[in-house]
Length: 392
Image 1 (spheres, rainbow, N blue to C red):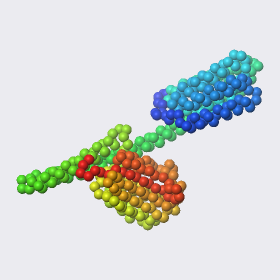
Image 2: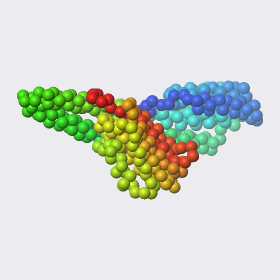
Image 3: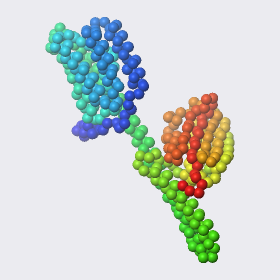
Image 4: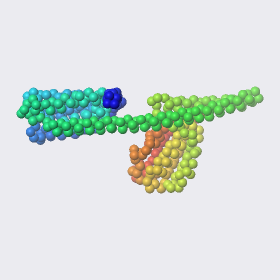
């Protein structure tokens, strides 16, 4: 069992696409630099004061690579610590270093287990043990040197294990969340595949019916046959457009979309279902005809999800306003409530409703924004490009 666990640990890959250096990393290093300098100036009984400050500053620089190159950062840091522990051991000096260096060590250990591979973690723990052993050997080689007490070594080792365990826990929590989002996307792809079948079947059926009618009247009414060909061309263009959009979403690496069955004309049913508390007001304006089925269906689903979130999470809301407006280029959907602005935090809600809504809008070439208003309430605003008339 232990052997299987060890193999599983060594086979653990690195976390893909770790965050690169951001402003917070530079801010952390900038904040710790004066701390290290002040500690070096004010700390009493500090051996090799200048060297201790230089070592601490060098260790701080490794924090900038702790996510992208965790093992390299650990090897550089603990390699430096091994050297600065070996030199005092040779000359018989009891060198302890700065507490700032200890903080950097713990942060590097966390980063190693959070971002590195299993093999990186194993190698890093071996490298880490070298300066610790040197600290313990100091009083054995030089009787005049006090060294680090055994209790401090044991306590420090236990704390390192706790820090490593925290790194592993955060790592697997992030992995579980990513798996959950992948599962949501997979479900959306399956629904989109079913909608692709329904949409294509609808258009192909219309093409078949028009083709049959055109064939019947071709000899007696050529004009009617020509009209049938025009309709067939339009339906074929719509089908091709829908297939390109939906198949593109089903390809690996593309953002998926939910393409449900109802449309803008069905949004009024949502108002009937939810009753009068809070009161839901619907406004339809502009040109809402001739929408692609996927755009029409996405508007319904976005409105449904937004109304559901408002009813469930908008505390003390008395009114929900749904506005759908269309123009020559796009269709806009706005759903807002007058509840407490800070009452609903999407990160604390179960599921991935807002993520799915954003993915639907993105697939169709649109945008979606959601957030609290300045005074009261929460607003969802989506803009989707409308279909071109008579073709793809």
